[in-house]
Length: 314
Image (cartoon, rainbow, N blue to C red; front, side, top):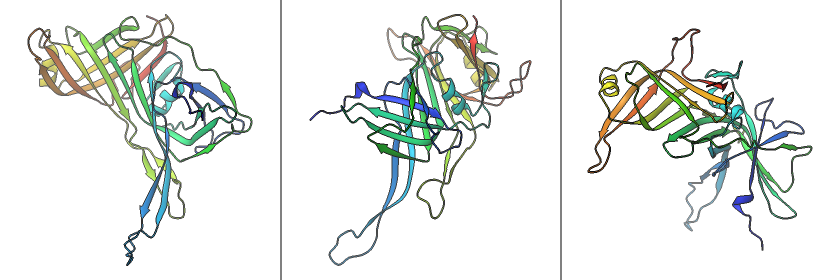
């Protein structure tokens, strides 16, 4: 017997025109990932019937959905479509802001198994959460997590399906790929060892009587939080925390002029702070958490909580 090798799995996505329905003759985009996969999940309830022989009478399937996601190493041009779903926005002149748009995907995992490959699929998949982690001397990593309407499995590809190759752009890192960091409202600008951001769309299941699949998916408030670890050089960041100041955070990552991304969080509050003194022969660090807020600042006004620009020249 030949078992399936995790190193040969393929992950592919296609944008849906009608949410929850895989397009006819779909053109799947193979995507790059480092682990984990979206899953089909069902909810069951065990009967509470009392039997004199002490056995369980039944177990009922009452709901099913698509959940989970995948980990990735950030690279240029690879995740632009998924960034739209994560922010609820649409690219306009290479600028993306969080908004109220819905971008759902059908997701397929292909497992190589000789003559009969195995396919596992989810549909109506909206990005619920996204994270991005930037740590000195490390690759920039992240995660997408989804909520969707259902799934299926098959020994054959979808009729008429074709597949676009995954991007081959360089994996970005926190050293040579990190072009700049700006923390407005703090002077002098601190030196950081790590930076993270986590966003959620607070998606919720919408169930209905008479159906096992979800009737729909509700979208909640867009929330963005994160953390940073900065070298304790002076009191500028610490005072911004003490005074509950409005500050702004922006960073640029990429590896080729014209192919950089700029992430801008125009208004944040430092929500917690810890001076970390780990002991002898260690640097004293400021470990801070932040919460992002809607901002009308800028010219033109940002009118968002998070803005991403692509094809930025530095």
